[in-house]
Image (cartoon, helix red, strand yellow):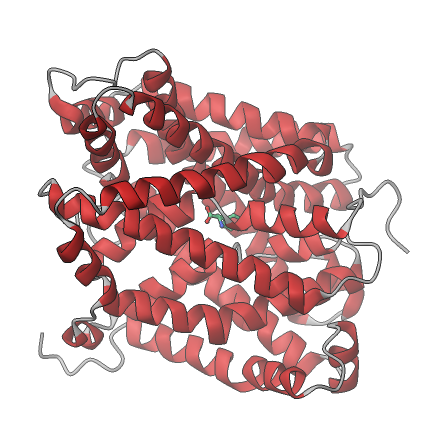
Length: 454
Ligand code: PFF
């Protein structure tokens, strides 16, 4: 029986759309492009795709299965299915990851919203005196402006979760996400005409195999796969928990993973040819999208600003449906744990997450001399800890829980795989391949396999 007062998706489509809305977001455009650019392009993309196929999809299925079975939140699901056992640590880490990720996600989404408004007012339709790069740097290093936009974005996120996730996001997912897909396709075709097509496509699709020798690309690809699929922190457990009827879970999992990957690759085809056409370094970091896309819109000439407007609007909407799922993970847990009303939980948790995000915003300007991990600034450090450590570790525990903590027959039945060969393969991946691969990637990222020769 579902817990009292819990929402449920009204239809199969509602659930799939919500899961897709969670997956498709800044991770596909902003994060995918800069992380791919920083890690050498095609070789990274290949590892990323392998991670999605062999680790991501099996764990999506595990999260869906756990969520639907338990009908609870990220932590409660483990408590219900395995009372008194330590598995719930995955859920606790997931809630912590939700706080960390949404804290900086709100900052970047705030930047996107600011660009949207600047296209709305026409301010960015022509190049500002300081250039598009200068405009970007001036904005993010300013103390107050980015904070205001982070605040506005968080208020929108809080507002939607306040009225209830289902009501709040259905329309955005049904209409705006397909529009974003179409726009990205149109822009990628245009980008291919800009003169950097062969270099851009080669960067994205022709691997430089020597890049595989660098241990850091494996952890980056794994982290990107988890981040982009909204995986490893119970977001999909939480959404699966609002499922009522029998659904076909494998079909839903493949659609979510397939669509998410398609969005990322199309974004890559949109961004990298332009990166080479305009002579920007692919490894420019988190500002890549903000520096390159205004050049693209500018080059369209008359009316290019309309594309800029649509791009930043639709991306902000996609960010919003992802942010909603991040906030929902934390809120669902706290309102059950402390018997708060949804409204109270949303305001408290949303407010705290906004505050946690402030250093990430200031880290671009007044606090830019602070680095936490290596030479990463504050935002980057939050991202690294959450996406490259917490999410894969959560995924590892979820894989072990489904693979070893459930009876085989139950796992196959509850996942809708039944006694099929693909179901057996799924359990094999969860039991052995995914945990071992994640473990090895962790070891390699701390330099375990390095020969000491750089
Ligand atoms: N998948 C989202 C994106 O690609 O933008 C980010 C995200 C949402 C990560 C929800 C994790 C999560 F639970």
